[in-house]
Image 1 (cartoon, rainbow, N blue to C red):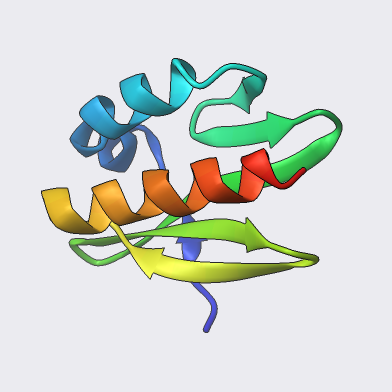
Image 2: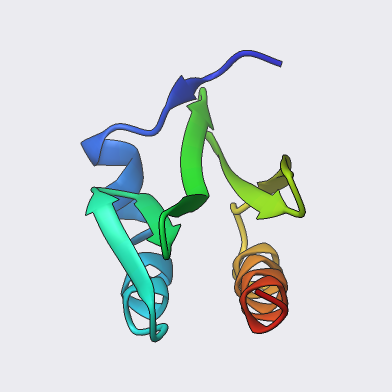
Length: 87
């Protein structure tokens, strides 16, 4: 499913999540909303109308997760931390 990368206005809606991600040791934000661990992209965001999604690395692939509610955002952080712990 093709979606555009999240722009500045969309990322503003995710400020709390972005703040939490920026605090994860070893995770670097190379561009706004695009996070790397070591030399590999791990997470970036897309927008589709009013809906926001995170593409999160799971193994060698990216899996898309909605990030429109606090619960969805917490799930993405948990999955990212789990993935990084295995790296």
